[in-house]
Image 1 (cartoon, rainbow, N blue to C red):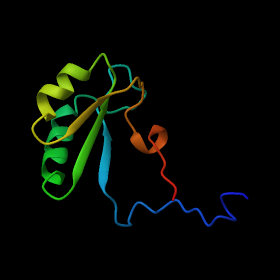
Image 2 (image 1 turned 90 degrees about the horizontal axis):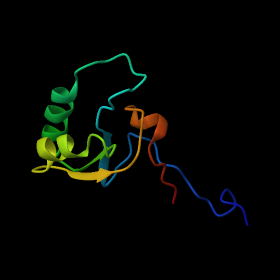
Image 3 (image 1 turned 90 degrees about the vertical axis):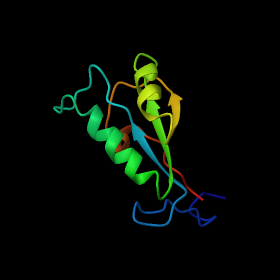
Image 4 (image 1 turned 60 degrees about the horizontal axis):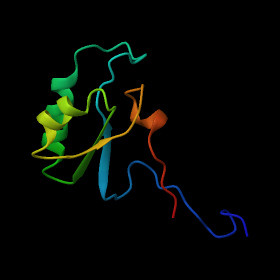
Length: 94
């Protein structure tokens, strides 16, 4: 039986969810945005008042992400070289 036949679904980003994933800015990212770590911290901290936050940080940036976000987010050390989570983050189906 295929996932389609089993009625699996990938929920839309607007639907109810348990947490939000954020990627910590990567050192050599191909994003053309620089020095936005503080904006990530402010955003994640404010959002954490309403839901669980998971910050994914490349091992080379883990210590910095942990230091700045440990009081309001779960920090995962996962190799990544891109800061835009929508393009490289997990997709959940149920």
